[in-house]
Length: 330
Ligand code: UT7
Image (cartoon, rainbow, N blue to C red; front, side, top):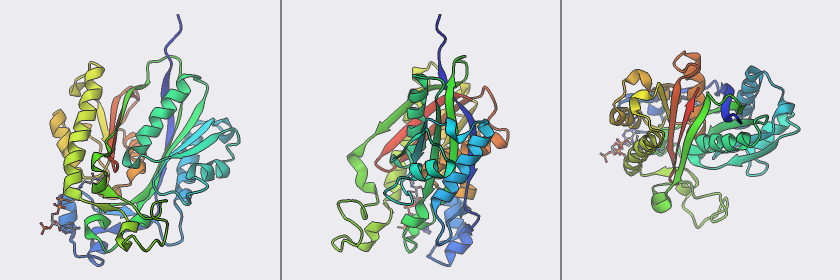
């Protein structure tokens, strides 16, 4: 009988810029306070690129670490998928810059745009790609420089975001005991206007004077987005569990997208899980969009909170809106 192939993560890597900006630093820029930011978001500090730095440096660093820890060579990689909203250039893609620097000569490479759910979208594609040939190796990267798309005079957004990158190497496992069990990808464009970055695309090319300057940055109606995010994250988590005949208590650890500690706490409450089962690092990184889940996976593993054979549930939500969940046996 043919054994079942699953896709496993061989190893992870992460990299963030060394520059740390605290809430107190932001108090000097906009009318805000450490107290407000901590109470409303859970964020205490974030890592941001210095002027002149590029996010590809960190995406490459995270990728090199993941490849090295996986014990493979860059030439063995078949595909590089980089989830990002903020590549160095529109062309070439960030994935191509990674491919070039690694010398991954055999690999196809492309960027994927699915906002904060991008890493889980990319991981799901990698899952399907290696299932058809378990020998294949896919580098999945989430890298984001939201600071470059932030209006530093808009207190409703500038306190939220951070920069960074995380990467994982995915391959097939013919034992079929560990790896990705199931995933859900979703989208709902009916409320897209609540979270946008309109300027700089082909509707409003750079310097197009028809568009107000603020529209060249991320704009968000936070309270409305918050309500949609909480409902969507809960639904994805419960749907994934239900269709795999699992109960919340079967989960060993949840790694949610780190957008707001209150959204994470809402999810924990709805699933009735203890806080020890929910990984949180938003206090140190803020919302790093597509990089948030791979950075969290890396840290959860390093801190011993994510261990071999654990049942792991990852859930994300982002602009568009997009949402995604991946269930896996680590
Ligand atoms: O990454 C995926 C997508 N993003 C999300 O999922 C984010 C979802 N939304 C949120 O996390 C929250 O809505 C925010 C953290 C963005 C905002 O928190 P909130 O509790 O929803 O605040 P609010 O927007 O309802 O604003 C409450 C008050 C307002 O003042 P008034 O109108 O009550 O006088 C704001 O002007 O807080 C004010 N405010 C601030 N005050 C100090 C907004 N931003 C700030 C700030 N510092 N940085």
